[in-house]
Length: 43
Ligand SMILES: [Zn+2]
Image (tube, rainbow, N blue to C red; front, side, top):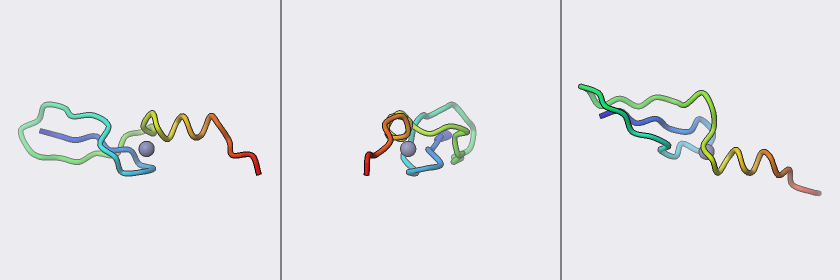
């Protein structure tokens, strides 16, 4: 089984079928990181 991880926070986003245990970085961030990007912190 393979795991797709967020390149920003390293959280597992998705699992996919595979013969070997693999760990791939997603091309996009997880929902949590995307949400924080869309909501910029107001300083
Ligand atoms: Zn993330």
